[in-house]
Each structure stands twice: as C-alpha cells, then as structure tokens.
Image (cartoon, rainbow, N blue to C red; front, side, top):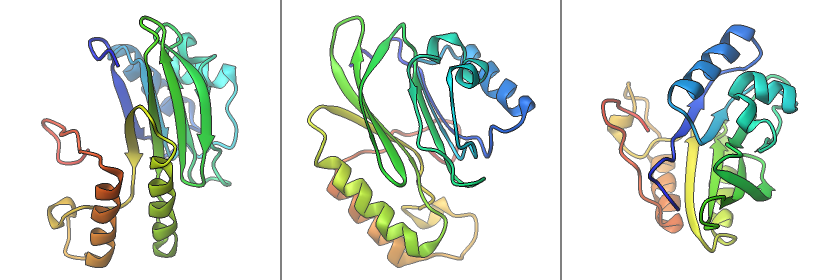
Length: 190
C-alpha cells in the first residue's frame, strides 16, 4: 500500500440527515484531501451518487458502499477516491463492511473494514465474533477502523462505570485479529 498520499478519515458523524452536517463533512474531506472515508452512525438507510457527491465530493461518487441504518440507528458509509483506488469486492456484515481495494497507481491490493459496534450489551459478543470471522477472509494488508463502542483499558473511559469482562473480551478479539492500534497524536481516543 502506498502511504505517501493516503489520507483516511474515520468519523462517527452522529447523523448525515441535515444539510449543515453534510457540509461540515464535505469541508473536512476537501480540507484534508481524503483518499478514503469511513463514516459511522450515518442514520441514513440509503446512499446514491447524488448524496455521496454532496457529502464527500465527486471523486467518491462512483466508489462507495454502505450497510444501511436501521431506521435512524447505525449505518456506515465507506468511500474511496476514484483517482486513487477501485473497489474490487465488498463484504457486508451486521456491524461492519469490508472493502477489497486496488490501488490505481501500482495495482497493489489491500482491505479496509469499517465498523460501527452495537450499543446494547447483548449484541457486543456477536459483534466481536463477526470481527474475528472477518480475519478468515483477509489475505493481504488490512486496516480496520470505526467506532467499536468498546474500550480496551480503564483510561479509555471518562467515569468508573466499567465492564471489565467486556474489556477483556475486546482485548482478546484484538489479539486474535493480530491488529495494532495506530496512535492518534493530540487526542485521547482513536
């Protein structure tokens, strides 16, 4: 994967159903010259080229995929710039979407998985199982990003209401996936 000019935006937008929020997202995408965008909690059941063009810009309008929101809950939009990548294949889960990409410049392939983890406790274990199953389909470079709605350690929480069992399950899933966290400078969470 050529990383020299790959700008990736992952953001829980908490709804794209207002024109003002769509404009904020578009301005940020243009300001940082994104190559790949993963938006969680879109709260939209449908995307088409016109919506993607309005929210992300014309270079993303032909190169996107999404699992829809259920009513006004959830939803993920994953899009890549057609000047950099082509989407080769899409695999959608209940809580995730995986895209197999091919770089236009050198033809190299990699995968990116966008997630929006569930809020209800009884769905979190199903989410972790879905993530672990995802690993079985990867045979190339892979990035997983999004809003997991889970924490790894005490310091990731702003109060003392902790579910240590779920933290341990999340850590175990991350170990099974063999992923490493990309640290974010200047912010507390990634």
